[in-house]
Image: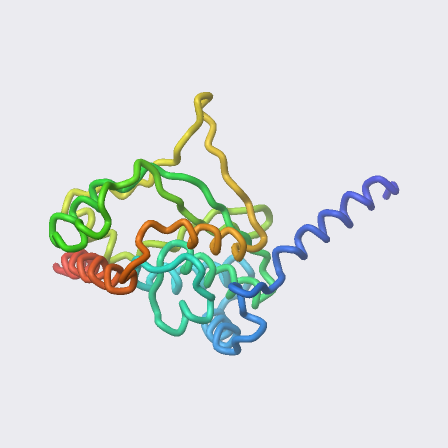
Length: 229
């Protein structure tokens, strides 16, 4: 092996190591429940691909709901539901707890206007609080290193997606492209700084938890529709 190739391999290993570290929000190092749950979920799995799939399916099926952006992985696990950012953060934390490299992929998508409009039509008080809908919104996904980086989106649970289908609300999240048709993804080892900055720019500030609760009531109605035969 040449010196140059050895350097490339060492640098690649150092880069992978970055995606195994805990952070303040990705707090598997201080939360035994994350490590214990991850170990429990993968006890019958034969390899990392099966292990990660078991983690992904568990986190994906946690109910989707509106919340703050800067939520710790331990808090998402404790309360058992979350938004795209919180659920992705939990998936990354559980993956890293099992020494499977994982990272965050953040990008802009076109606003899910049909879903938002449905929520606002059902609850006029929420409509008054949220005001005009933005044209774009942020979205967070997970990438896991399984013989190469693979993208996973754990944000929506099955019952919720089934409800959207029955209501005729599109499931596809459409990335926002630039003038040349390129989509810009920001890849992060830590979500902490981004999540806090995003939280500071949140439009809903007053009575935020009450507004979230009302939105989530409407999302739960969608979920109940999805569970019907």
